[in-house]
Image (tube, rainbow, N blue to C red; front, side, top):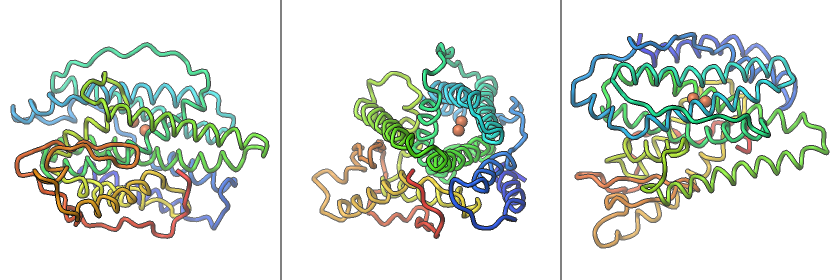
Length: 354
Ligand SMILES: [Fe+2]
Ligand SMILES: [Fe+2]
């Protein structure tokens, strides 16, 4: 059984144990128990090791080690682990604290996965950056949580695109599957924590909390827009990871196809959890909107020289931008989205505002 099948089977089995409670209100004790237990009970107790990484043909190894994402990925995981841990340290509720501590542990383990990959294939990673405790751990936790809602959505699709295209061989995909599956659990936990937190705060603290949430969205949006606009000149930062990965793995895919894959994968990965839990909705909604816009644009007569995607243009997806590199034989974006058919609509689950 490969990692993908193992993770899926473990999730299904453990999720079945959680379906013994009835309906509840968001913000209730039952809601809290369910989103915390979902994270805790679907824990995968693997230990990263150098042996996880198979021997590779020289050309595949060269392609892997040449990817400009590894330092960003390590810094992202490092920062996420520290921010989440800082918030766990101040959490009052014992069950919520336990779940956030597990989240922080898994972020640290993602870093360990990357360390073993570096060891196995001789990657030289930059040393970590100095860390200072955040002034507001809740803000830092929300920056990581909402940032993951953006990045994981695209990572789901890019990972699937890389898998289907054979960009990397199957044995190399397997160790990453565990990390991607965990990021799915993290964003599910985060949006439910957010829904619970909103409803359990005293009424007079809620307006400030909402302002804080919007403040985080604005910071993340500005950060990603500026990085997308000046990608080539951008320094190595953790938040460039999605954009860089899109450039690499999205090579040869039309923008519309990439959006369809991201939407279908998001549905597949998060659809298996208890339907009473809130799902991240903001990024999928924005991408669906952009997808409709792109469909209209793609059906218009292409400009001289071909479509924007085929010409290697940069196309906005909500506030994020996916840069589609020009490549010989890249399919023109017809808007048909034929690469990975799948249902992209919500299936009657609880909607959140994230
Ligand atoms: Fe992570
Ligand atoms: Fe995460």
